[in-house]
Image (cartoon, rainbow, N blue to C red; front, side):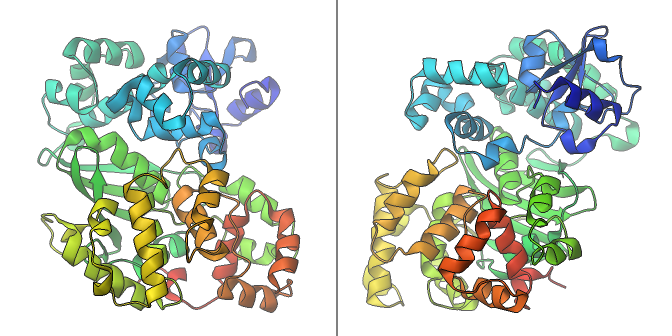
Length: 490
């Protein structure tokens, strides 16, 4: 979008928050870059240049605005709605792969050369993977500086910097302030408190956001010991690269309140990225709802409760296993099956608030389960054991970088995997915004009530007009039912 100068100028002059994260405005006279909704008086159009990423602004010599804090913008919705190389690379960078494994590790995960990845990211985003990861480290550093009492050396290494000097230089370059000055600017009443490892922060999103089906789905299907709904918030354990974590997420009118307890603060960036992905917070609800409203039978559902998101997951392999456990059984039965596996094979965690006891088992741990100990039909045992074995040996890989068509084909080749199971994994684990479930009983019932075609073939043909947002249409159709997944718990 940053190449459409006229449209960008209009967005900046109207301070349109819908475009935050889509592009960044760099001001030639002040050498500052801002989000489109920056509250200051807009600069003259001839003094504006537009960039596709904060990293591109930083590479061009601009520093972040202290007023609108562009580093806290929601992420671009592009990376969650596309399946090409750039989008897959951006999802992996957000997941901290470059910080952990470098650019060669990123290239290995994507199956391309480092040169190809560099070239494509530079062409589309104006910055390579190292610059993009650096911008993300700067954002994490600022968050730790402003929300914790950690010593600056601890902040530096927790944010992913290799040295104190690099940390200091980067913070000064990006924010035009030394790390200690950033912390000193905080009002006394907002001074960070608490113990290291426990963080309270806000996760921004583009409005509107309807939390009913989003948190309702997560709470209604919560696996005991791994997830719970407590005091108006969804809580769950996290398996992260350097250790375990516990997150508490509560919906607010303009942000999601997030509290993280981490065994290792180096996991902060990854934890935030996975929580944002689970709650679909980088979506553009206005664009999605406008497209779905073009169908006159779907429009009343959208108008009644706009801003529905797709509830996703923090662990793709975990969700695939749970999808198999939930085949042809009730929500309660699926939770019971999963809870037994968690108790027997999950890693225990210490929850200071009580209630959460384990992290969901890894595919390696589940591959060692005796099939005869599984209380399910023999055919589903075969499906379960085949899936976890192939996940464990990486014959099937599910992750942010998954190629959607290729992964669908691999899953369909497994015994017991039909279109419904594959599409629900594509929708909620892989993040495909166009995944569709025409054979789902709830979808067919809703379609019949609304006067839409109810047979799978006819409904699929009608849904072509909803593309590329059919996964969101599924949420609106499901919401016509009285199932607990559609309502915030009382």
